Image 1 (cartoon, rainbow, N blue to C red):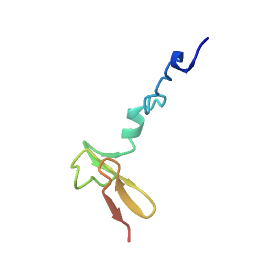
Image 2 (spheres, helix red, strand yellow):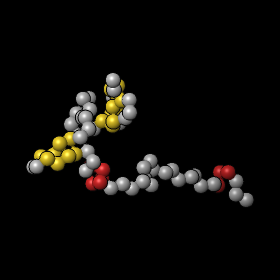
Image 3 (spheres, rainbow, N blue to C red):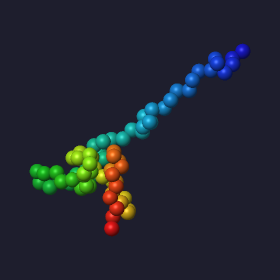
Image 4 (cartoon, rainbow, N blue to C red):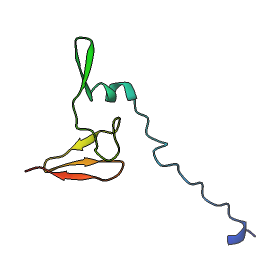
Amino acid sequence: MAGPKDAKPAAKKQPGASKKTEKGAFVSRLYEILGNHAKRKNKVCPKCGPGVFMASHKDRITCGKCKYTEKNR
């Protein structure tokens, strides 16, 4: 007879493992090409530095990495 001690532990799902996104399509939304230069569309986080963009919401601008937030006026 199989009891609770004989049961196999449930496999844990990796966070984000089931989602597959194409980075090329997303990155193209963050930059605007002007001639030979690329201009950033979003603001860069002042704490994290270049390469970490801030998300633009209706009432605030937020960094997803360090949670830095600026309120829109």
